[in-house]
Length: 261
Ligand SMILES: C[S@@+](CC[C@H](N)C(=O)[O-])C[C@H]1O[C@@H](n2cnc3c(N)ncnc32)[C@H](O)[C@@H]1O
Image (spheres, rainbow, N blue to C red):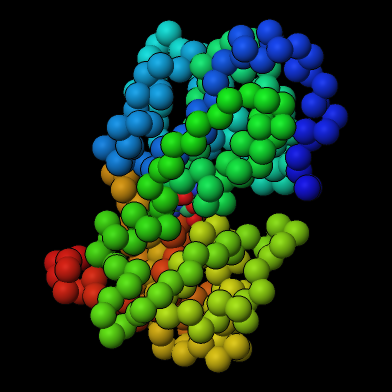
């Protein structure tokens, strides 16, 4: 499997004693930003952590909940360094666990939604390190909901898909597989939005279809921009990452739910 370094490292755990004295790694979802949207299990894991390795999108209000006695390690990734930082994260997780620490690997949203949580789990599992997953509330679900946009709605949308808009990844999405999903939720799509919208229109999606970008959802700096697919394709929207982009008729439900906005 690509991105996994387990085979070279498998020899690290040499004895049964080392395994028994190894710490445990909690792979924890921090939710979209509002600390009140952490799960109780996530909060408990943070309170008991010896060390917390956290990502760029974990809100500062959540970092404040980490006890001052715990070590905090920032492992956020900048554009272009994803793979090298990911390798370092694997090594750090393994080192802390083998040193007998209680480790929390804290990720924005849910660790299994574009979070590489499963890769980290697989790496640790191959080494014999005990892992517990603590799912988080994904921004893909919570951020539209908080902005008054339900992903499904009777007679408007019977289903939705969550897709990456990151074209720099080796596996950019095959847009024809997503073009006609009733509600399309795009994460990491701010930079490529015009290109994505053009693609969807060329694949037959209605250019007048409404869409919404919700920047920094659930935080005090949340901003919602309502637009149309055509306007996005024309480069007429000004959006800052991180944002959840919702495309579909469910966007109009917001007018009923939050009429003053
Ligand atoms: C690498 S993905 C991680 C997704 C995360 N695991 C989740 O379940 O929410 C990062 C993307 O999630 C979205 N995102 C995460 N938190 C957000 C927030 N509070 N407001 C808006 N978008 C957010 C953005 O599209 C951002 O580019």
